Length: 462
Image 1 (cartoon, helix red, strand yellow):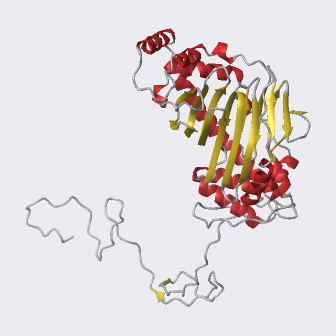
Image 2 (spheres, one colour):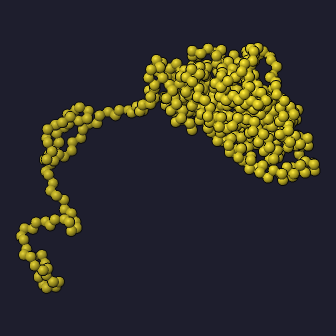
Image 3 (cartoon, helix red, strand yellow):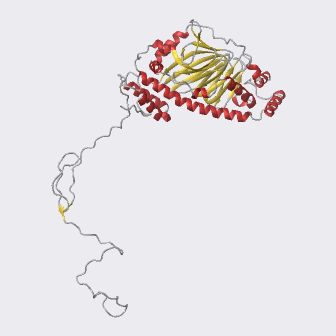
């Protein structure tokens, strides 16, 4: 059976909760795909645990890293979240159902450098990243930043769109934009007011502290058991996931605190100096002489800042494209291992194609490759589309040559053909040019030279 779908298929209905319980869906939100040195997790009142590669990551879990540690988390929708040393992050919300084309997540970054890269495309999706100075809502994006009490929050958007909001206002970011936010009471600045040397220095500091970019391309493959559990959790109705998440979040807990000493301020001299000069206040309109002098000096000392920003933006675009492809395959394969029926698999495929028509071929390929029938014995292989049979035509009589046999025969539909009326066999056709054979005359004229023009003889006589 083929699991093909078009972008204009009917919207999917909600599938009843499969074998995995709603508790599993509310708790299992992803896995760790890279761990360097000491990375710990703590869910609720449970004791802290050391996180290793391919460990489950739970909802409302606090993730902390040591002074020389790094980690990459992969969520069930294929999106990734990277953190560097001395980081502290809490997963506040995760609701994902590809059949309903719904994806909502919220993370709270208390400290450290981070990078978020979205993946599977859903029709209804958003991601919120909260810091002590505000909240950034992003969609279809690559976002990275710095959160440290010694410096302003630095936010960079490499792909997609985002809005940073706090109690004093908001600022809209497009691909390649960045802002710095000194406090929750400071109006966010406009992105075009960010000096390129300040942004370039901050991005270089983030890059040195995060895992190498190859970590996403070389992520470990999820085993069959994990895919099946993730796929079953994906099919739990979004409303049920939301209710479980709200119940779990009702218990107030203090946010996690990083254990390391930090040290980012020493690497971000331009960000610190620009903040001292009040360059990041969104209410300021005109530059002071001191600010103008700083900007001129920073531009002179960092002539390659604009080129650095262009490179980072181009790398973010490539990273996002690769993550969308990998994450989409990841989701479809998981559902393929857990879907209780081919109808569910088809609805997930159709919803995925509607949300991301450009990936229709990729989605259909992985759906057919990963889904197995309920007995898990035979894969659902693509078949040719059904062709409507046309009613048989009544045979038409055509002239028959004497050289043809006159016996009736059966046509393609098994009915005897009508006998064709005989027709005299035609002789060879006349052809023009030197290659045509001469027509035999009644009398053969004697050979001789042709008569000369004007000799008075009838040229038709031979």
